[in-house]
Image (cartoon, rainbow over all chains, first blue to last red; front, side, top):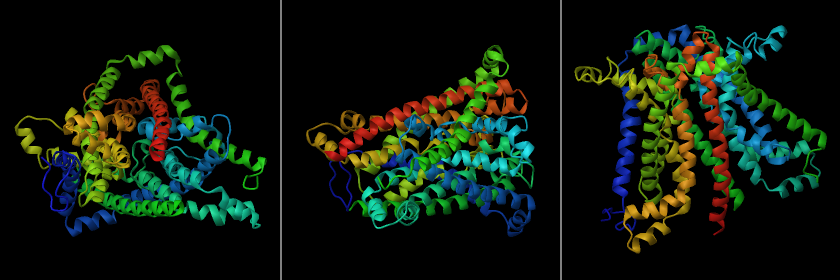
Amino acid sequence: MPKNNPAKPWRVIPGFGLTLGLTLGWLSVLVLIPLTSLFVMASGLTLDQWLAIFADSRVQAAFRLSFGGALVAALINAAAGLLVAWVLVRFDFPGRRLIDAMVDLPFALPTAVAGIALAALYAPQGWIGQLIEPLGIKVAFTPLGAIVAMVFVGLPFVVRTVQPVLEDIDSEVEEAAASLGAGRWQTFSRVILPTLAPALLTGFALAFARAVGEYGSVIFIAGNFPGLSEIVPLLIVVRLEQYDYVGATAIAAIMLVASFVLLLAINGLQRWNRDRLSRGAA
Amino acid sequence: MRRDESPLIRWLLIALALGFLGLFLVLPLAAVLAQALGKGTGAYFAALTQPDAWASIRLTLLVAAIAVPVNIGFGLAASWAIAKFDFRGKSLLISLIDLPFSVSPVISGLVFVLLFGLQGWFGETLRDHNIRVLFAVPGIVLATMFVTFPFVARELIPLMEEQGREEEEAAIVLGAGGFKTFLTVTLPNVKWGLLHGVLLCNARAMGEFGAVSVVSGHIRGLTNTMPLHVEILYNEYDFVGAFAVASLLALLALLTLVAKSALEWRLRDEIAALRQS
């Protein structure tokens, strides 16, 4: 029997109550209640406890590295991702499809595997490490290592958001710009880049959000020196291992709020992106 | 062709892009293989046949065998409710389903410690009944289900929305039951999309590290999944062992990519056909 609903009195397709009930039930049990428990625990902290956590220089350094490093990594990914998307969409060369498929590797490769592989590459005796060490550049066991790992995990996002928009750009627009006397660089910066901006920003934000919370790939290469190359997720684990549940919960709550703000921003960006795309199609 | 770059710039851009991808994608993969086989194939296979390595492989398969089917069930239910009906708060629900993707893996594990740890909400009740969730298989399964939560649902929701409701409505008007309609009409329509979501879900379930690391307790032979076993061996400077197990996970990632790409080419054709009709 179709369920009664004032907005839509009669439905042909059955199963609304069952499937929505299952969805909401499982969502609550597995996701919402556990996340709420974290905030309930965090709300039990006194003002003095919060102030002590914010005043801790180790906590401050971890937040600086997680957010600052993620920002740098996302900027690198925005530039490199735009380049890769451009090359994949605009040029034909041998192995293009294979490389296109490879871009998603960071989504499929377990973070721990990426972490030990990067650590092995950038260690002083590693393939890359022994090349850059004589130049005085140290990547492994420094904050730079954390950024390298963050670039790896965020790599697919910009490529995958920019690629479809680039494919849809009407060649006539570019030809018009060129025929009106615009140089290649002018056409790119004045015509193409503004069209790509929402997608580029979305990809940037997604890569940033991923890098902020990243754990597995970073901890092997960063060296994890407190106050220097220690990321926030690792600090949470350290606090847990010290049975400092209050400290772990408080830091996690701050991270979660930051993630939710980022999520809202990304949703807004994606809506902007979609609106521009559909307006372009119309 | 005025909209194209000169050949010189074109090859320069291609070289730059391939250089970047080579540095960040190809070299790490090659490093895994080189390190795993660094002391010869004998050492490689010896590392893989260690009892602890086997135990971690078995546990990883077990966890995925529970988490992935649950995820399929949830994904099908959620996408049916969202794509086939109109109700208020739908976009909020979609955002909530995506939520686990934006939570740091460590926090995904931490929430279960807060619930089921000794100082947690249910900690004492569980201890009184002698039920172990934390530092045991149930905790690992829960954390894995949390981080993989959105995979199948987010794949199916847009696909089912695009396909509309007419076919299901026609089947039901013609007398098919709801479940039969689902099996004979909806499921064949979304099977490739479903498989795509399952592949990604499975890769994440088998490869999850952060969340599982927090709840596992790292008990060798008992609560170590493959990624955790990799970490332990690596921290003990057993590099051949660590990279040998890692090479299996890298192989899984490559197989996932191959299957995923094949599916995407097929899906693209199907969606193109759908849009034309």
